[in-house]
Amino acid sequence: MIAAPAPSWPHPPAALPHARLDEPPAGARVTVAGLVLVRQRPGTAKGVIFVTLEDETGVANVVVWAKVYERYRRAVIAGRLLRVTGRLQREGGVVHVVAEVIEDISQMLDDLLEPGAR
Image (cartoon, rainbow, N blue to C red; front, side):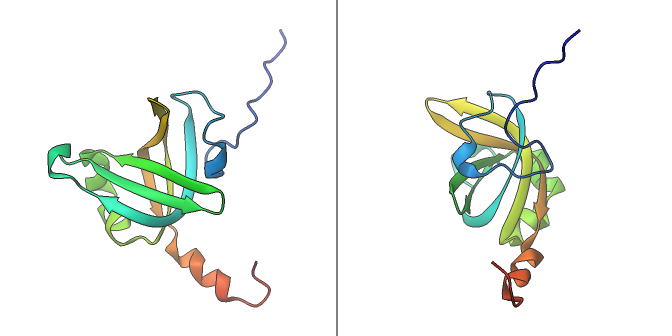
């Protein structure tokens, strides 16, 4: 039996550049990372939080359901740089990552101050 070729996008825990979010199929498990631009918690969203992340290639829209928020509350509220693993969702041309795991990796921002950092 011949194995199917592996998809060409990075799989968790490697972060997928936001410009490549159109490559994996809907429902694929992906990881994205970026600076937090916006956190929104609309009153009509029944506890859902929307987070917009930015990397050097673009933005990623993250949906955080209430149960996931409770588990990763500190990272969602205080994180400046987040890594999010979840399922890719497409609706009407809009791509979202539905969060399953959220990590605050803000400490990595300090590495940018090191001599020789990119």
